[in-house]
Image (tube, rainbow, N blue to C red):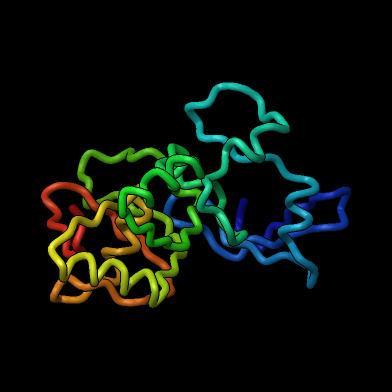
Length: 193
């Protein structure tokens, strides 16, 4: 789609105009409404499954392809690493003294795009929105300061922490976008074990 083109949905009641092209062949668009877009998406959309799941979307996918951490609408897909956790597993971890420090992640379309360049420095990621609360930053920093381990679930979480870490290895509360691409020989600055 070219900049200026329009896409129509929901029998023409909803449309968007293409404003720009993204680095990974996506589009930045503006919708023609002042209503809650997410309610419309829930009504007319389908759960996005990763490309390695080779079947049609079912009604069960809406719940099964979601993490136990999900609270805020906005991601294009579930962060895949988080799918391995259940409420029961989190309770077992907490019973052993593990502190869970949530990070808000809005995984973007780039999560579905494979690396297609040989020179990794030329690969561009789409930006993904994240929020690290003061409470989460304090939990991580206290854990680090007391010489305990910090484990991160997933690459999006790792990229969020790396985008908010200070020179001394502490995590700052932050809200923003990251397109950080982490690959060897990158040295992590955040306190990840």
